[in-house]
Length: 316
Image (cartoon, rainbow, N blue to C red):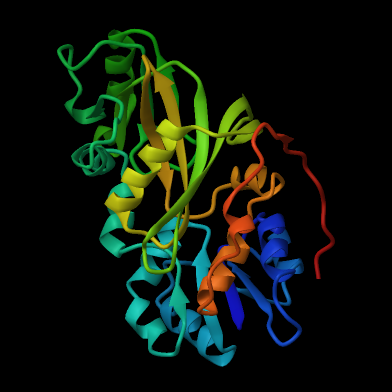
């Protein structure tokens, strides 16, 4: 079976982990619209994709899957995954399984304002949230964090201690409805993966406590066994009905766990669980082949501290 990873970007390790599990008759394809993406040099086959807003993107993507007999597709970028979700039936027609979620679910969960209703209806704690355009003196007390509604990672985030600073910032923004204001919570922070099988059934969680945050992502984390967060993960799984792995950030505040971000894709913090024994790529490949995932793929050793570092790869 052949696997395609779309918008593979800098995820060299993830591409390598999938590739090393394939037999000699199968190959790993990586696609990205940046010809200098380091992950392209790791794959068995690589393609430079059109931009996502190109009128030819869908036809191009379908032809790549058909001509290369692709059985399993996953994307590492939500805007791309939304496009691919709209092609789900077309991909299924050629025997190509898409890992992700329903198009509407991805759109709602990547919108930090719409995500509040979706998660709270499922009984999941979410920070107090208002659109910046609707924020007023009577909204809620600070401190505050302002995020782009459709932002990724830590990009564009602002923090303020008092309400007047928030209102002043609002006056400077061209479109306040494109931002949310949230209550800035303090407490231990966690990043974890929620794994469903390819039929959207909950399987397990891989939980890490963040020890050090970098500019945009977790730099140091420790794997943990956290039964309460595991139950939170199961609730999220049932609400989203996704396939494969999604990346979640949470914070423990006043003895409650609040979800502060969800990415409907592999996240960079999965690596901390992989080095501790988890093997989500192996589980996905097993399921795509119609087999059960080995039990050792579905757990990781607790108390393992991981630290990220930069490296360089030679491009093809």
